[in-house]
Every structure is written in C-alpha cells, then in structure tokens.
Image (tube, rainbow, N blue to C red; front, side):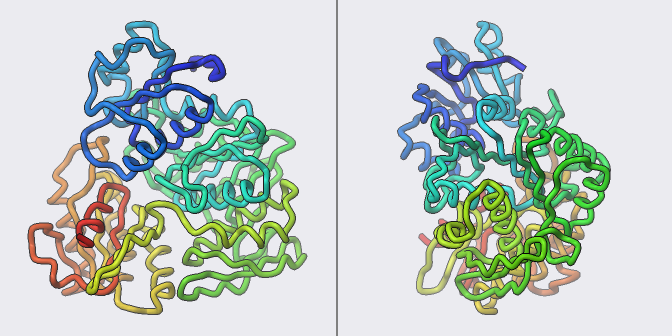
Length: 464
C-alpha cells in the first residue's frame, strides 16, 4: 500500500465521490483542511445534498482532464472500473499516488485508536450511535460512517485532531472487485472491534459461509492485547469464529451465556426500550428512538464499548435517546393525505426480516406496503428464497428490477420476476412486479421503500 501522510496532502481528487463511504471520507479530509475535487456519474445520489452542504462540487462523468495538480487520487474501489477508470490510469501514469477507499480510510485511522464496526447489518446504526454518544459526552471522536447524514450529528464523517478515537464501518466486501479481493477491512488495524453478525452476504466474492468466517477470524486476530472484541453471542456464525480466538471477548445478546444479557425488550410506537445485565450486574433500562429488537442489539454493542472506554452509564442513558437515526435507515420521508412514506437500506434477508418485524410495532400493526429493489444479481439469486420469506412479513409487496451496483451484468427484470414468483408462494395475490408507469392510486397508507440501490427516489416521487 502507498504510504501517505495526510498532514502533508493539500489536494485530493475522489473518483466516485458520491458513494456513501466516499462522502464520509471527504468530510474527514475537509476537516483536515485538504482541498477536494471529485467526479461521478450524472445519476442523482442520496449524498448529493450532503456534499453540497459541505461546499463540495464534482464533475459529471470521468475524464483524464480532471487529473492535473492533485497530490493524491482516491477511488471507491469496486465501482466505476476500479483502477481501470480513465482518471485512475491518468493518476498512475503521472506518478500521482492512487489509493482505494479502503486503503485511504485505513491510513487515516492509523494515527488514532480505531474502533471498527463490522458485520452483515447494523454497522451504520451501531457506528452512528457510538459516534453520537461519544460526541455529546465530549470525547471528540473522529468517524467515517456510510450514511448520507447522521441525526443529530448531521455529517457522516468528521476528523477531530484532539480526540483519541476513530470510529469506522469495516466492510468485508472486496477492496476492488476484479483487482484486489482482500476485504476492505483488511486495511484497518483497530484497537476495538464490534461485530453485529456474520452471514453470507457477497457470493460474488466469497463462495460459501466458511470463506466469510475465515476473513472475519483474520480481522479479529489483529486486535492488540490491550484491545477487545464486542460481538453478538446469539449469532451461531459469530460463536463459531470466536471459539478459537485468543483475545479479550465481550459477548452480548438475549442468551444466558452472554457477558451482557439483553432483557425486557419492549417495541412501542415511536420508541424501543430494553434493560441490560452485565456479568450479573444490573445496568438498568435504556431508551432508543429507533425501532426494533435489532436496534436494541446495535445499541447494546455501543453501550458496552462506551462503558469500557470509561463513559458512565448515567451519561450513556442521557445521550442515547438523542440519536434519532441516519439517512436511509428507517427514515421518514414525508406524508400526503393518502400516503406515509418511509425508506430503509435493508438488502439482505436477515436485515429485511429485522426491519419488517420492527415496523409491525412501530406502526402499531397498521398495514404496510413494501417496494423492494433487489441489490446485485449474485446475492438475489443465491438468497432468493430467503428474500421471499422475509418480504412476506409485509402486507403487500412490489418488487423492482435488480440493481446491479455496477458490479455485475444480467437480466435484471427476469431475475426480479423470479423473485416475484418465489414471494407469491408466501404472500399470494399480494406480491407484484413494480411498474413505475402504472397508476399508483392503489398505493395508500404506510409505504416502505427498501434496498441498497436508488429505490429511495421512488419514495420521494410518491410524495410529489
């Protein structure tokens, strides 16, 4: 990896600047007084407004003309042709240092005590809860979190020269698909790791669950002797990975064998409450203003970490309710006289199941329509039945063509129709292929758009 001293960098160009990870990284670099240029495709992204509020602009599309006087070029990694992008090639040809997003984030974290949050589902929310409480408690954390916005912190990234800790999402996806299949979290060397759950989420990179377990074990094994791992002990894959791990491990969950046991989860309209018992010591009850049992788990991972960093339970309980979510994680978009529209990033069957189970209580058992956009061909094909079962928790489902994410090629409409038929086995006469040109008067009540692509645009269009 190219060694970069960010204190000496004055001008960075970012290829694919509108990606959520790149936007968070841009916010950190801006805090270090680094000038930033960027480029991306013309499509509207969820981060457009965030970048504009930060005072950043970008070129539409990619051109070698954009590469001239920069000290460093950073690229998303797997999207936009990776190192074969014309701007990446121009940088390499001109001798300008080139890094993927994963490498750049790892280097930026290196000067701090890293807190890496990994797992399939919950990374963003857990990281955001951690950053919010630490910031409100005066700990001055740095962070890079893959969300367009964090409420109430606003920006998805921040670099604080005084603070000790750097919180970052740690993704197991490839550094640069087709070029470097080491996981993105390979470049992070954290003192503390939080793991929500280990599942088979990227069949285009990992052939089976065992391959996924291997990379997570290798990541956990990097934790130094004075660090620790906070991990969901209810997840069977998590338990299998840590069975032979010789590190300080703190488990959490509802099971009796966990160090921190979650009890009395209460799902209510507008809030979630739960209590904790840590090594048989009563920590009392907690309130979060985000829905679902899964978020009680996410909050618990953050609470354990905060307490072990010396933040008192009193402060944690004071500041925890201040966190009210992130962009694209069960986000309220708006309402009309006919519709109430929400949006969520869930794109794996386990995430969908958790979100829809939470929605039942959050909306007080009112009927729910889901507009789902499958994300990547390989994931959709591999987990087809899992998607169908999880989506059937809704009262009505509309399925869009598959979003390729620029990683794969295939017949997006044909595969989506296959998912429609599979879901109809569990939700007959209530599952349809979504056709945007059709009359939408049949949509009413609560509508939840769901997926990791650009399905959120449909939610905004429904409100117009």
